[in-house]
Length: 613
Image 1 (cartoon, rainbow, N blue to C red):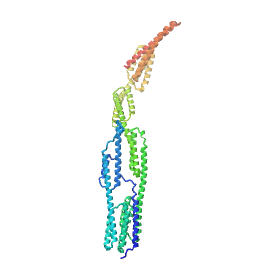
Image 2: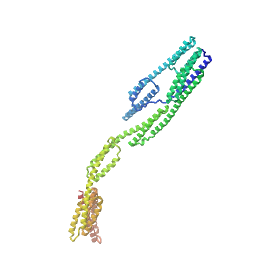
Image 3: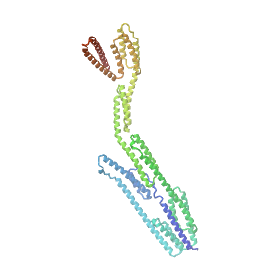
Image 4: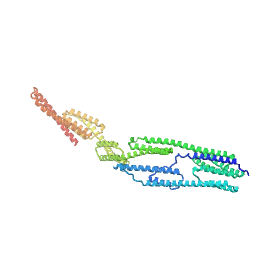
C-alpha cells in the first residue's frame, strides 16, 4: 500500500488549522448579533398585584429552558408590581395627609405580596445560579474528558502496535470525542487545534495506505458536501434567526469531520465558507433592519407621548369634554399597542414617559369626577326643589300668573348643571310632568274660554246694535233708563276674544257717547258710566291693573282735598281787594267744582273697590 508522505501530512494539518481559525472567527462574529435586541415579552400590564406574583411563580416553577425570555418576563413583572405598590402607597399617604396626619409620621404598610415576590425571584436566582454552576461543572468535566482523549491519542500515536487495532481504537476515540458536550469557551480553540494536530499526526505517523486514506477522504468529502448543501439551502430560509442557529450546528458538525483529499480541501472549504457568509450576512442585515424598525417605532411612540402631554387639562371643564378627551387618549393607547419595540436602551424610558403622561390625564380626570360629586348632589337638590315648586302650582287656576312662574322655572332649570346620571331622567320627568299637567289644564280652560268669548262677542255686538237702534224721543228719562239697562247688560257680559277687544269696545263707547250727547246728561253721570265700562278693560288685565288704578285715584283724591283747602284759605286774602266780591264768587265756584270732582273720584274709588272684592 502507498504511504502518506510527510509533506502531504503537513499540508493537511496546516489547512485544517486554517479552516478551524476561520470557523472560529465566523461563529464569534455571528454570536454577538442578538446581544442588543429586545426579547418579545408578554404584556402583563392588565394584571393585579396578586396576579403578577402568581404569574412569576408559574414562570419559575419548571426547569429553565431559555433564560433570556424568562428573565425579561420576570423583570417586567417586577417593574409592574412595584409600580402598582407605589401607586397604593401614594394613595395611602394622600389619604393620611387629608385626614390631618403629618408627612413625617406617615409609614407605608408592609405588603405581604412583596415578600412573596422577592422570595420567588430569589428562588429563581438561586435556581439560575445552580444551573450555571451545573453547566460550568459539566463543561469542566467535558474538558477533562477531551484532555484524556488527547492523552490517549498521543499515546496511540507514540505506540507502534498493529495498525488494524490502532485504527479501531482511533475511530472509537474520535466517536467518543464527538459525543462529549461543550467545554469552557476559553479552551475551545486550543483544544481543537491539539485534537486536529493529533488526528493529522495519526494519519502521518501510521502511514495509512492510500486506499484506506482515500476511502476516509471520500467519506469526509461526502459529509462536508452535505453540510455545504445544507448551508446553501439556509440562504433561502424564511426564518433568518433559525437559519443562523442551524448554521452554528453545521459548523459544529464540520469540526467533527476529518480531512478530505488535498485537491478538494480548498474548494470544499470555500464552498462552505461562502454559504456561511451568505447566512451570516442575512442575519446581520436582519438585525440592522430590526434596529432601524425599532428607531422608527421610537419616533412613532415619541409622537404619541407628545400628543398626550399636549392635552390642556386646565381647559377641560365639562363631563363631555373630559369624556371626549378620554376617548381620544384610549385611541392613542390602542395605536401604541400596535407599534413594536423601541431600541432596548430606550424602550423602558419611552414607555415610562407615555405611561406617566396617560396617568397624569386619568388622575386629573378622577379628581375632576371626585370634586364634581358634591356639585352634582347640590344640583340634584336644586332640581328637586324646582319639581316641588312646579307641583305646588300645577292645580292653580291663576293661568297667567302661574304660566309666567313656570316659564321662569323652566328658564332657571336650564342654568342648573348636571345631576348624578342615575337620577337625571327621573328628576327631569318629574319636573316636566308637573309643568305639562298645568298647561294641559290651562289649554282645556282656554279652549272653553274661547268658546265663551265667542258667545260674549255675539252678545256684545247685539247690545251695540240695540244701543245704536235706541230712539231718543221726548221722554228722555225713559230713554236714559233703557240706555242704562243696556249698559248694565254690557257690564254683565264676560270677556271677548283678545284680538277683538279694543275694536268692539271702541264701537260700544262711540254708540254710548252718541246717545249720551243726545240725552244731554250731566257730565258726572256720563263719566261714571264710562268709568264703569272701563273697569271691565282693567279687570281683564288682572288685579294689579285695578290696584294701580285705585292708587292713582287715591292720589288724585288727596290732591283735590289739598286744592280745596288751599282755595278756602285764599278767600280770606281777597276781602281787602277792590274786586273782592267777584273774586270770592269765582273762588267759591272753583271750590264747588273741586268738591264735585272729589265726590266723583270717591265714587270711582268705591266702585273700583267693589270690583276688586
